[in-house]
Image 1: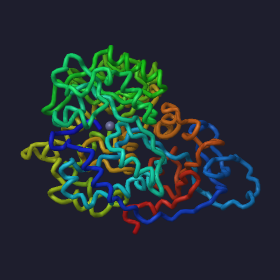
Image 2: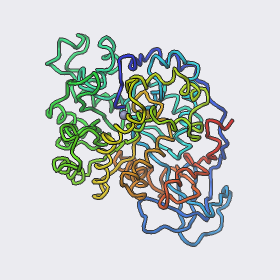
Image 3: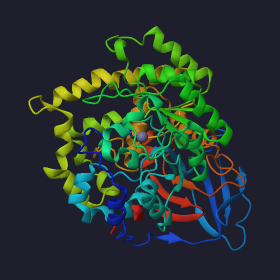
Image 4: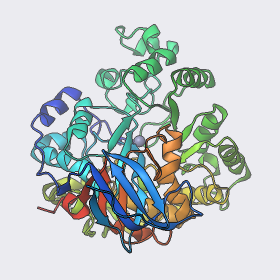
Length: 506
Ligand SMILES: [Zn+2]
């Protein structure tokens, strides 16, 4: 997440959520094909670790793992294997979205969630299927807010592999805990970093020694996290001048994360924040740089910003561009967004109907004043933050930076970031901004896997890896439409027909 727009929008009281979610009912299982042994043959194999050798071949899957890959000549079908002809189709590794927030419902603040709670269980049951529908077989939740939602996700009959950064590390009273009322913010963000200068505004039950960078990172490690997320954000809207951490504190987090073997991610969307993160050797910058600060009116990419981006490239810092964060806000001013057919594939009808109702548009009122025409607001976004982030992406793309595909779904209480589809839309934004099809493909597969140290398990089509695979009618190296031409998804070797995963399939 990068934004909670008002106090009303930020009351995720964990207990109430758990009550709501305890009624979670699972949807009918999708059409699946249980096979201990599968033989996918006659297919064009596209694996991001070697894009110079793209050939037709066959893949043998056994007990959820890839056991053999044949390129070129194909041996006869192995005994007892389920035969799948991939003739005329393309096989890629499952996609990875390394920035999601599973426990937030698009379009809803806590208040709205409460009011229309009957449709929430339906949304959560569809959630893992919507990611799979667009080929995402692994996701990373960057800030655990509600363990029950994650548990249910993992227990769903079909779901992407889920990794987390545990509870995030906001600086005391800083972003994003500042958006929760003072009375609850320490309960909602118990893994905050203590700031002795603010001792008078931190409840006494939180002892400084329990909230050092080292203690916080260790807590995430014990929690099974693969990464740690912290923030550098001075705020926006009515919440500006928020407290931010010093270089010293970031250095302590860096040291603790290295010691625990966790990937360090910094929320940073401004020039100042990314400069801070680069100097502090973070592993990943979560967000594109759409806030240029005092340089915002510069027509071209300023030299100061280029210097920081050069460091991003030189230090091989993972870069999650998350342009859909901005599109998610634009969605309220774009008359076509909710009309897109794709949304009904990933959002249950009742929730979609609510998005279309006057109640469902509450967030629009928080984003713009009523007197400004929608087109004018769209123009403001396009000429400001969207223009900035596109310039930055183009610069990094030309230098082949270590892009990591992450969508930040949903990034705010917006209905403009829906699971699965948001990834497809983010890819279109990346391409428009100047990333090549190959760069997008690598970012969503092997680059994510390597950065999060998951590459022994996923990220390419290689012997021994989990059989998370996607079969497409088109090549993702020829057009982005390919990602919407999926026919079958294998999750741990289990085949699922794409259509059976759609929210409107039954
Ligand atoms: Zn986020």
